[in-house]
Amino acid sequence: MNWPLFSVIYSMASTVIIGIFMIAALLTGFNEIPHIQIAVAIGFFVSIPAALFFTKKIGSITGNEESYKA
Image (cartoon, rainbow, N blue to C red; front, side, top):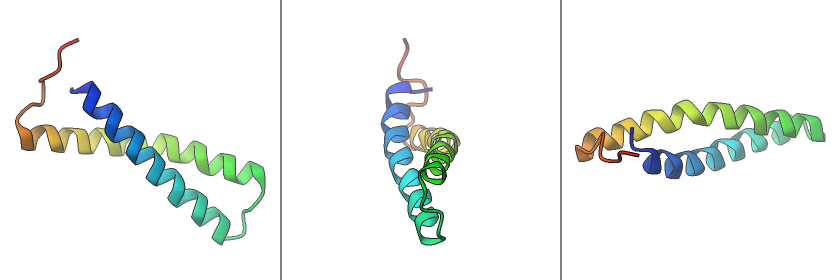
């Protein structure tokens, strides 16, 4: 897997998904600190499979799935 690409996509995906969960929590009335912390934790864990999915998709489009060797 292309780890540099994964790290870039993960940083973007985690920001977006955490923002979505925080806005959803605030709109539904869960506006206390523990609820926001739970939304952030769920966002971190949900963005891992999303980043893996999009990294593999972009790698298959460009044809460089294994371009980065550590």
